Length: 136
Image 1 (cartoon, rainbow, N blue to C red):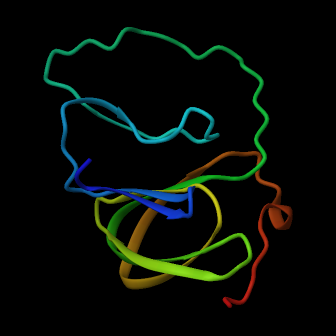
Image 2 (image 1 turned 180 degrees about the horizontal axis):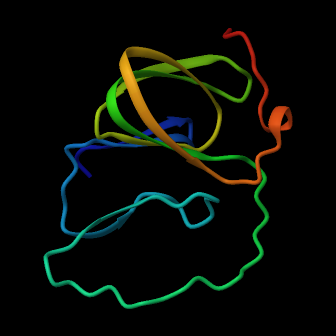
């Protein structure tokens, strides 16, 4: 799909970036079903009815934290690392873009004053949740 970028280390998805330019009708899921964080885009016309619903309690086993960043304003350089903390590549995301950080390591450099929203699984475990490292 145009304006969707999958950042990979071999076959492992590290991140999915949805550009603010993406615009397709309907519902589009970008994540595999097994991801603990699901990411979709929805584009419906005026008058579309989405049936009322609630979500059933379903026990899930979450091993890795996956996070979504919504860039409200600014530009952010995202550096990607493999599971051995080795640098792989970088990309820049900007206002209106969304990124799902799915696996591997990542670091950020603010290129332009930024406002962003982060969404990730809880409960938050503090220092147990992440390992900081110096890039190789």
